[in-house]
Image (tube, rainbow, N blue to C red):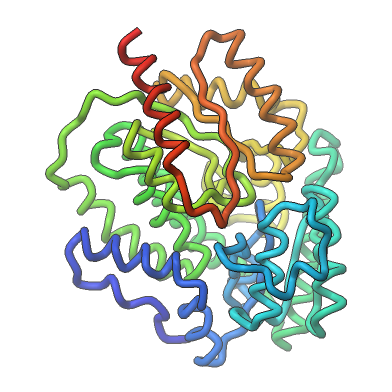
Length: 388
């Protein structure tokens, strides 16, 4: 068992605990991943949006969520065209600059650029660089069987790297660890929805995002400690608009942008890092673990512009999210050059217009540093709602 990689938060009051989590999230040297490797551990980097981290966990490896970083793409620019989204380039830059060292990289065909990312990685690194083909037709009766076989293929690749078999007992243990993690994240989001004055949008984001940087057992300890502290917080509700944020499914907005939004309104639900919360219920531990995990991805899951499921039309799912969160408005964003996000933005705004729900539209890039214009525009938007 590898020693803990993130102890800075332990024994500290809430404000200092949140500070340590924020410092870790914004540290582009990724010290926890480095400590894991220094202790002899192996790392699998996986690109956005959803990835079955349980299988990597069962292999005794660290699943590292590659979500880019606010860094300059000194080397990666020469491997890509200028018309692609930032998260692709910065994720490659992290590897080229040796900010993170991997034993394997996995991407998904969520868009043309992401599908080709495995090939770009493969030309630059000796370790396995794979595409995990999540079902393009989620409504096919063969989708679960197909996905289960894809997960088995991933399992075999991991076994070749570690030299150790991954048996069902280890898979079931990992399912249990991640079931607990998702349950704790649901508690965090329920608190944000029901009492948003107790946990701001940027705080909830930091507490969620840390999951991609540390072993899930450690993240479970962190959330189990912080949730009671948040509930006891001495804070009171304010007269703010309740909003749902949509558009953070892949490339992530800068933390300061989320903090800017949180100063103007209560963000009571969002799709930020939705892959970490994709599965909405506990995955059953009985039976075939890979089949159960595949079925959960398809049948017990959230929605995203990069999954095509006729049972989950994105516009209706967004309206349902707004209704369930008791929100009065929506913030609809898209990362620059993100084709899936920009396409859905049009459909979302049409649905919101028809439902009579006010919305604010914006665009972002992960390396943005100035948010004055967004803050001014958002304050005007909120005031129009409050005083109309």
